[in-house]
Amino acid sequence: MQEETNIPNTAEAPVVTETPVVAPAAAPAGERRGARGQGRSGGRDGRRGPRQGNRPPRAKSEFDTKMINIRRVARTVAGGRRFSFSVALIIGNKKGKVGVGLGKAGDTTLAIEKATRDAKKHMITVLLADDNSIKHDVSAKFNASVVSMMPAKGRGLVAGSSVRPVLELAGISNTVAKLHSGSKNGLNNARAAIAALKSLKS
Image (cartoon, rainbow, N blue to C red):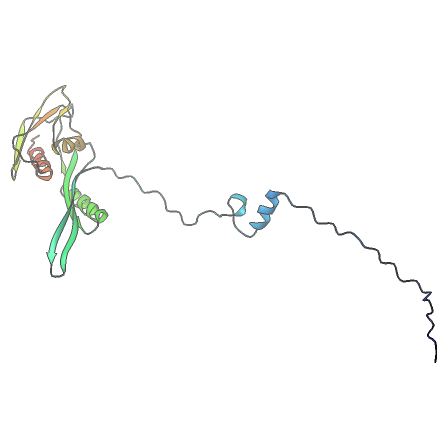
């Protein structure tokens, strides 16, 4: 029986030196945001670029607008009732031009556009005196509305109902207007005022 002899290994084991791992320093917050936003155009911190295709601002109209009324009307058809909107308004440049228009459509925006076109189509030019008043007494009737106007020096504008915005948008002052009927229909009153202004003579 052979005996096993443990012979010590005289070769030295290699020495392993561990190098400590150092974490990279954190970048400042501004640099991190800039790095994240690289590749994008403009904007704060590179996050959002400028808007493209901005529309130019619309040119302001020379006419001022005053709404008389806006109503929702219904029409009975085979499938039920169909709703639309009716808009009556007054436009003028406060320099002698004024008009009244009526528009109907399924959308309020489209109805207002139609009413504006109708008012421009039926616009009149008013003959004014030197103090922006009318030159003589006038009166007119439209349906059940009856209105009369007379110059009144130094009194400003004295009027009511929808006759007042008609005179304001025409640039008329120092005038007194009276309604001689009990009609509360603003559109008829405004059209009666337009008829009275059309009857002015030079």
